[in-house]
Length: 473
Ligand SMILES: Cc1cc2nc3c(=O)[nH]c(=O)nc-3n(C[C@H](O)[C@H](O)[C@H](O)COP(=O)(O)OP(=O)(O)OC[C@H]3O[C@@H](n4cnc5c(N)ncnc54)[C@H](O)[C@@H]3O)c2cc1C
Image (tube, rainbow, N blue to C red):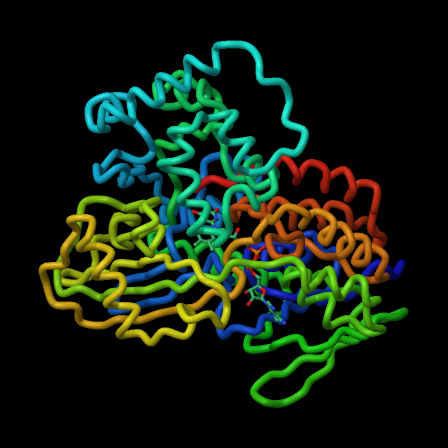
């Protein structure tokens, strides 16, 4: 990268990672920054929009208390009293029964069928008996089964995994289990449920939430970033990046082609997309790798209801394979506003693949699918549905199929060798991460830039730290 003390950096993507990096770069006066975002609003998957007077998110989003202290302090500084501390109040449907989620010991003891309770007890006893040896060829299924026992896997994690990632648990990499499941063993889970696990947020009883929707975090960072001199271009879809001594970023905006020159490109767009945009073109093996890593898509189905409140819960979770959606959130219950009166919005999360039959369904059919899913769980909508609105996320979750590690490593090694380009963020590192993790990556990248030079060794250390991120729901 250039040795110029006042280098120019083009940041691709205005999700939390891109915005966080731009803000810190501008605030610390480390670079002149321009952020390029293809959408008409900031926030990426962590954004919000207004629907019938309710601020709705792209599926259930919470700011977890495990957020790094500095980042939490910065968000608190930006949002002030608008950053609320809210009690978690959700439910999960297991074997036809509703259980509080996050799990509570009494609820588990009194509400679950005896067969489930016996199953978990039997699994715990079997784990106490030594033997079995190591797993020579671990998968998501084998790691979770060894840690949590067959009952919890069969009733909860495995059906949920099939829906979320569209793959059999045996087809998924063990890394998916490490990244996704905070309570990796039955005893840890029991301690968590009994409230005996201390010093960590993973007991998950509270969360932080901005009064005007989760996207308020991103809009606040965006405002602060622009106030400190960074430039934001919305509706700017990056189409090509010509690399060299200086980087030439080509984009489309309002049907017009534009070009921006910068010393460096910091990309938070999907790594597989980046590989196809760079010129000179990536080698064939890298393009093959880009075609081999997959993201799960998601349709968000919003039902605008003619009632003040549908339920007292923030989110309902549906691991059952018979129910299409994985989660339904009632947005009003995340904030304390209770506004507007007489209207509430439900948001259903329906995982799918881009361009599959589900992706192509029209809004009315998706609305019916969601109403049917709710009715099957005794959550019948008894008031008028004023409107069905949908949104589609092409890159909702990375799919860690077995062997994805090799494809990712190929892409990652290529990206590292492309001069003047840095990739990070959830999409940029194909990481199943929370917002605070994406922000931590952004802060780390900015820290690695010193006097116009990028400290690759320090970044490599940070990259190792990112591997310990565990996503929370
Ligand atoms: C259903 C769901 C629920 C979630 N719940 C939580 C939660 O409760 N708590 C939590 O902390 N996290 C949650 N997350 C994760 C959170 O949304 C992400 O961690 C966060 O959005 C990652 O930020 P990012 O900037 O790395 O990526 P993104 O938000 O994906 O941003 C990438 C940006 O790049 C832009 N882009 C892509 N291609 C181009 C291009 N060619 N040109 C210009 N721009 C481009 C995109 O439009 C996007 O704005 C959830 C995610 C999902 C899908």
